[in-house]
Amino acid sequence: MPASAYSCNAASLYVGDLQTEITEAMLYERFGPVGNILSIRVCRDKITRQSLGYAYINFQQPADAERALDTMNFEDMKGKPMRIMWCQRDPSLRKSGVGNVFIKNLEKSIDSKLLYDTFSAFGNILSCKVVCDENGSKGYGFVHFETQESAQNAINSLNGMILNDQKVFIGHFKSRKEREPELVARAMFTNLYIKNFGENMDDGRLRELFSKYGPTLSVKVMTDESGKSKGFGFVSFEKHEDALRAVDEMNGKNVNGRSIYVGRAQKKSERQAELRRKFEQIKQERITRSQGVNLYIKNLADCIDDKRLHQAFSPYGIITSAKVMMDGGRSKGFGFVCFSSPNEAAKAVTEMNGRIIASKPLYVALAQRKKDRQANLAAQFMQKMDHVRMVLNPVTNTYQALPPNYMAPVTQVTPPDEKF
Image (cartoon, rainbow, N blue to C red):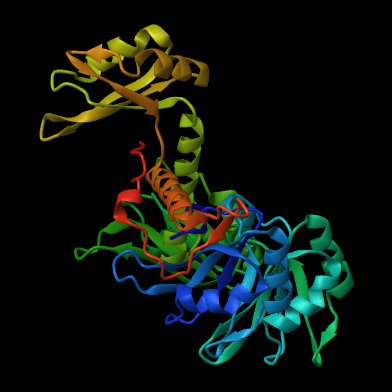
């Protein structure tokens, strides 16, 4: 279960790098002496129920959670040091990269605790980890500070320092998506891929087109079984500068009445990665455009088609699309209507939710992505489970935790409301 699906508060901790056999009862026994615990949850695979190696602990008081973080972080539990940090409910903070520092060229003996101790002088640390495999440290790690200012101070002070007889590099963390364009830009490529020149091309003609930019090592037009050009080929130069100039001058040029493409030859994995980036970018742009304007409608009568759906919602604004989802020519009972502005969509939700169309009351709400719906449902369920695990003490009138192995009566559990 993702972190966002768990109820986090000012006294909640994330405990990671746990052995799979560690249970809630073991964690309760270990963390109980620090302070009153409201709830503990070891996150498990939905199907196998095996531990995913991390858990969340809700303390009654923030001071107790802070004491546990200060005194127990990287303590050994069942032969493996625990990694403790504040529970961060909003995943956007983790993914934004703000305050996140990357360290490389670490000596093998440096572990997460030593890294934490070294960097904690510069500010509050949300997370700290040396990346390891079965052979130990892989020589790099990450430190996530609470603020960007702390991260910059750490970089200014420690970049290039000698740590355990090795000079380390420290810089701002960059995601793979951010690094790949830089790697491509720095690559000293000499191999070019040329396409869209049609059938009237052979090796000699292609060499003639590109040899004016510098000495070539090989030129090849790809052909089919009959020897006819497939419309693409490759040119390998001796020097990167010559290849770069050929790309600048030949890409988009008219050859045989066609506008040809000329670019760096890529491996299949690179092309697939680039396509994935483009697809993800298009997907995110589409999600951004539909944010707050796309409505989900269910409980549609079988007679409602795209045209009738459009007609029903058209009084509330300009509709950019209206679609009833179909299965083999038959309505699946739900669909989507996208407006041109959030105000129009909000008005449609207010006016149309519960309205009877073709003898059936509609359910109308803002559309959500599947993972967002699942996260909301899981968060609601976990909040209700937290309430079940707490009991009111009539003497102190405060909540106290039940033992981790406490089983609440099934009748007390209310399933989460259905949302779409």
